[in-house]
Image 1 (tube, helix red, strand yellow):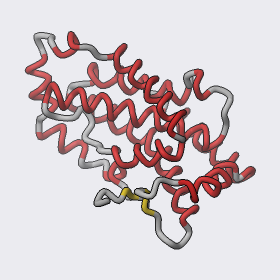
Image 2 (cartoon, helix red, strand yellow; image 1 turned 90 degrees about the vertical axis):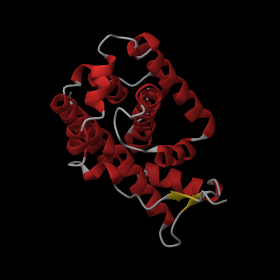
Image 3 (cartoon, helix red, strand yellow; image 1 turned 90 degrees about the horizontal axis):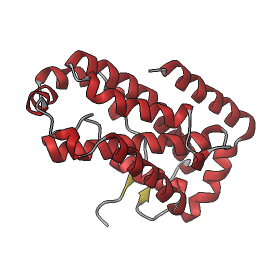
Length: 213
């Protein structure tokens, strides 16, 4: 895993944002048009959204680093590493859909791809093992990012994720003789204890969805 390269890319994007203010300008334009379910504080809503985007992006290398460390400790590296490598490639070798973009605005798209990949794979593992591969629920964050990216383009990115998952995992992946042994490892207390050492994965971003409406 080339975590250092991911972090350097994020550092460069933050530098670009400080020089151009490109993302903040975009968020300012989006504020009046956000879905009413997205709840923002009355004070500094644009700043809150900008901090959300920054945290959402910065969580990707943290997530990949944590997942790789935990997978090695739990003995499930072979199952997790292919997922992590695809998520990493979204940043380092982005698909054509996001080529040519720069700064945090571009990395929001790439972070969305990585987070959605984890979400899709988690759904598969829950269906087959009654346990997520990576116990991190970013569903609400992904829905908010979807809105910020824009419905049409975000749907295109979702298709990229679906295609990646189809290439990565199929029904045969869950039919191997070792599947029961793997299920026991995935649900083991050691795996759960290892994840609890990474509280950054459950950070609060100050943006929420009104799910009572």
